[in-house]
Image 1 (spheres, rainbow, N blue to C red):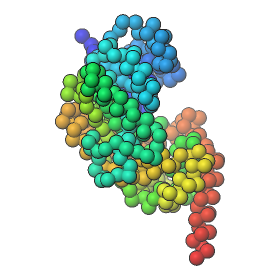
Image 2 (image 1 turned 90 degrees about the vertical axis):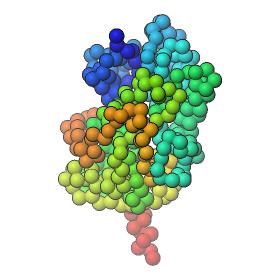
Image 3 (image 1 turned 90 degrees about the horizontal axis):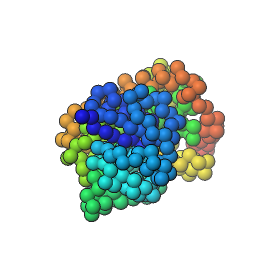
Image 4 (image 1 turned 180 degrees about the vertical axis):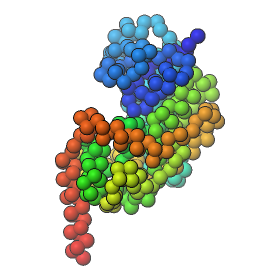
Length: 343
């Protein structure tokens, strides 16, 4: 008899890979509850429940008395959203898997090796603080009522539609790729030597599906990342190599980027100071004890070529230009060069 999983969301970078793995390789009946905007990316075997999760009455009408082995939450960003899930699914699921974030770990970092026991504290990013608050609520319900929660903390996960980069504008990564192709300098936060981890979504799915229905995962938190660690210079150089171009790296301090980028809505205080400018190396031994199959199968040099092939062949979908960010980069670089010349 197949196990039944409900995905809230289900069509994002991480969740799509998990749904496909469950349908193709594992013995699960997969339900997806969302507004139906991107359901064309899902396998035909998926049971689609088109509904706004925030409309609790409608959700209850759609699901009826259906119970699940797993409810998998991918779009719960704030405490009220997690409280809503608790009301909807308490007593109706054997496991509730909540996607939190590795950005919730202590900033500034007291050490660069991160385990699930690393303190959760991020004064720089509201997104991370909301995730911490949601985790605390769920673990309180586990301790007091036995609510079967499993916390999952991804770091920087990508797929064929995404290129992992640090400094970009509001329209995403493409303008940085375009600058590389045009031989223009690209801004890298700090001196480029801080350590970072990027994870291919299908590799992430191995760890996640191994936690589903796993009794040893109840009441626990797990980080799921690749075992490959790169500097930001190496990340950008790998992208340039895949494009067949010369990288013109231009290093700018994170503090300066926050000061001149945040007023334009780039939120570098959160995304850089609160996350990507901090060196992190993830210790995944806890996950591998519970999910022995977890492995890094797609190195970054492999994954980025897959992603670039897709991005370059799907211009309307992926090549979203950002002239505001492009002009901002030129202005930042010009300002710093003028400051250097004044001495």
